[in-house]
Amino acid sequence: MNGIPRLSLGPLLYYWPRRRVLDFYRRMADTPLDIVYLGETLCARRRDLKPADWLDIADTLAAAGKEVVLSTLTLVESASELAALQRLCDNGRYPVEANDMAAVQHLAGRAAFVTGPSVNIYNARTLDVLAGCGLMRWVVPVELGRDALAALQRQRPPGVQTEVFAHGRLPLAWSARCFTARSRNLPKDDCRFVCRDYADGLVLKTREQEPFLTLNGIQTQSARTHSLIAETGALLELDIDVLRISPQSQHMEDIIDLFHRRLHGGLSAAEARRQIEARVPTGTCSGYWHGTAGMDTHPSPSS
Amino acid sequence: MSADKLQLVCPAGSLPALKAAVDNGADAVYIGFRDDTNARHFAGLNFDERRAGDGIDYAHARGRRVYLAINTYPQPDGWLRWQQAVDQAAGLGVDALILADTGVMDYAAERWPGLHLHLSVQGSATNPGAIRFYHERFDIRRVVLPRVLSMKQVRQVAAASPVPVEVFGFGSLCVMVEGRCLLSSYATGRSPNTYGACSPASAVRWEETGRGLETRLNGVLIDCYRPGEPAAYPTLCKGRFEVDGQTGYAIEEPTSLNTLELLPALLDAGVAAIKIEGRQRSPAYVAQVTRVWREAIDACRADPAGYRPRTGWLATLASLSEGTQTTLGAYHRPWQ
Image (cartoon, rainbow over all chains, first blue to last red; front, side, top):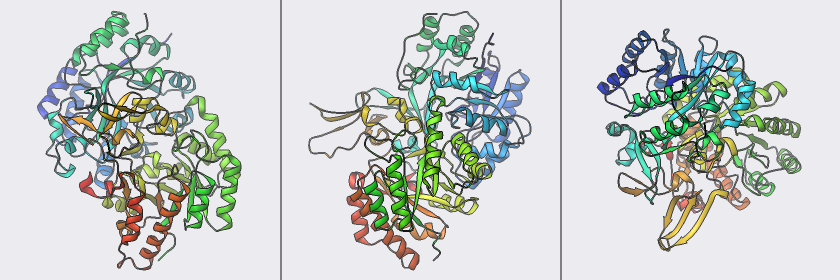
């Protein structure tokens, strides 16, 4: 008999004003979330919140009974970024989500860690190597489908938990270039923090006005919100330990509540999906889960 | 100047291309097998076992090396094929394997302890910490850096890396960190990581419409060309899109990377090898690009202070480039 997956809140991927961030996490303390990932994972220039501020938020959430994990930067280029990542790994209070192999390297043999979706774990042998380094939980790369995950679940090392990205605009790519600054004809080194103007990123449309991608600083996301709320039956069958919800600017409590009710039997797949559709900026998708193009939508299962 | 700096590593998608690279001065040639175990999985391209053996013989007879890329990420149902590719390459006597996946690397290091391993650009290692992970566990001998670092950062990484670094010098430009770009599978279901191709040809449609020549990727409009406008292959990140009411190349123009002018800086930074992109290109292309880079590297080694890219070299490379434009990409900070 498999347990009901716990719910996590992924790291905030957008650059919100400080007060908004503090208010957001104060509200998150009162939700049925089990785990909260904290920290800036995208851009070292986003410094409205200092490491000490993140630790304060962590303490508040931990006091409210949440498991807290600190997330590292994903694209680590300069010596100063690497040093900051290593200091985060050595925080001594909370486990770390490694979003780059530099963090895995620093934590290996020292502290149990989580790997984020940008750490490429596509097969059991990779999972074994990382388990030997101290992996306690891995977030499945978003392009891996249900069938590959089923095989990996059968082969996974003992004691390693599996977390699936279940709701949010998909993190698809990282670059040296800041695309939000580019959209305003600004260089990255003088970006004027224009990403703060887009609480859910800046939508890139095709010339047929179809929302396609979302520009978020150096990151490119999907325009559609990937949602597995209708797939909780299959997720339960695969014995997934944690479902990740990625922060968005609106309706966060509703979305957490919908997942919570869906997992605890209070909501049909079709109704849950209908409610989610009404609370995302530009539609949903679930293609990756079904082994097709990530942007595809698939009908809800009947249960 | 020391011969262990600025080795010229050239691409070959066929035996004639490999011979062209060797004949025109490549120090090493990199190749891949004819399937999704490598990141240039294109129809009609790459090597079967016999051809690979012929190529290795040809290069070795002339004192050059052959590297073989197995640089995609196997999923459980494909694992055995990747393992067999490693065994096959080791049996052929390649000079190094270029690997990305940690599991594949673990297998290769255990099964073939003497075989040199390079971390592929698809391994996304952009800093000394990440490089040390692979060095300590698998004894990698070289790392290929993603095309996202500025020249200053390349210098820092090269100085602190436990293994020699290889950087891209010329060819198609990935704007995203290699190994961490899923744009192609988001649109088509197939990505460089899983399938070995970006914006795969099977998903491409060219259509003449009232609005012009439209290029689509699995139905998504990537670009639209007016009559007479030169049309490019619809690589997803190089299309024209609308952002905030403005239409343009929101991610990157169709342009090629060219670092010819950076050679003295790369030499001074201690960069071990320059990689030329383009296993999908013709033997004639490989011959011309290899010849230019051989001359340039020799000139730079002979007199780094007096080195200037020659007009003829630049003209040749520009004529072979995507959109006939070239850029320094991320090496040049304002590009970022």
